[in-house]
Length: 96
Image 1 (tube, one colour):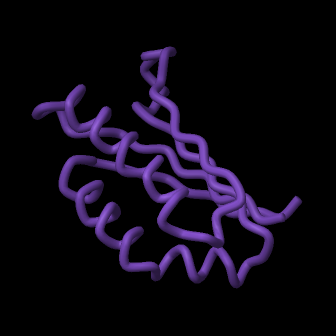
Image 2 (cartoon, rainbow, N blue to C red):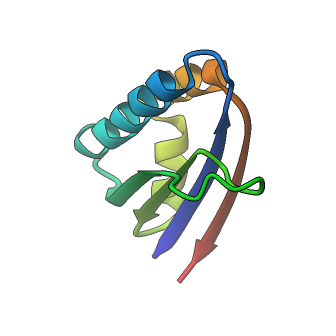
């Protein structure tokens, strides 16, 4: 299995609305992209100085499945929205 983890820090403008919209858009990818085994998007409850606003964990069977996800038109559409409403993101991909 391959795990793709991302954390997002959102811009202040319309922050709560953009967080909710991003969560909904990310969750919709599970029905649109068949290489996704599991997808979980969550909104931070910590709100500490080191915390990010949202986390995403997506699981795939293979690295090729992750690559297909990365270039899938639906994912690219969501990614474009996210890039316009976030100031920072970090990612890690690993196998388990």
